[in-house]
Length: 89
Ligand SMILES: [Zn+2]
Image (cartoon, rainbow, N blue to C red; front, side, top):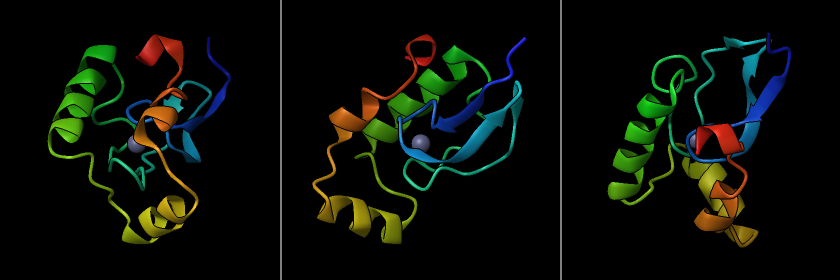
């Protein structure tokens, strides 16, 4: 049904690595929100839950290295969240 390769995190919109491939989760963990594809983001309800929790705790980065790199380039959370595919918002 889906053959797409998803490199954008469904939870936070961070474009990092392959999270879903051909409709299957890769178990990749997002450097930004720390979500693992499969555990929380297989359903829109599950990922909204995770997203709300993550933002509610200050939208903390999982990887300090990625955080430093992104913030030095003017990272903006809301701009990043605009990358979230429409069906996962
Ligand atoms: Zn993420």
